[in-house]
Image 1 (tube, rainbow, N blue to C red):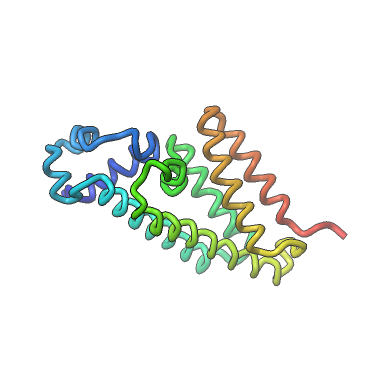
Image 2: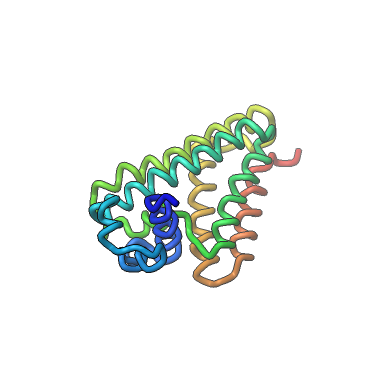
Length: 189
């Protein structure tokens, strides 16, 4: 087994469930079955761990979004896949890693900010492309710029995920996601 990957897997889950300040190297060590010194060998400090987690998470999400672009033909189908990523996160009693770190931003080392911005920029850029293509194809309303629509979708899903988790009510997320998609559909003539 690769201990570095085991550390990252456990740390990612803990961060998504508890927040950056809600877990320690001792928590990770107990779950992985190693000493804290072994974690420090791979990640000298918690900021190094957070950077590695954020880079890995950004890579995972970017790969999935590229897959949606290649294997899903319509904007609506691509958006459904995107929303499903959030649904799966909620079903696992987690929050988006980027969203969780963003909520802790004022307690984190400033060096994490560029990686956090890169994560959200990747999702936002993908959404803008999907929405632009959807507008061209007539699948998406064209009365708002795709950048504004992308910001609404991203903020809406992130917020709905947090709200649903805090209320322990997945229906909050489902209803919000459905409303976001409904508001993107072209207006009836």
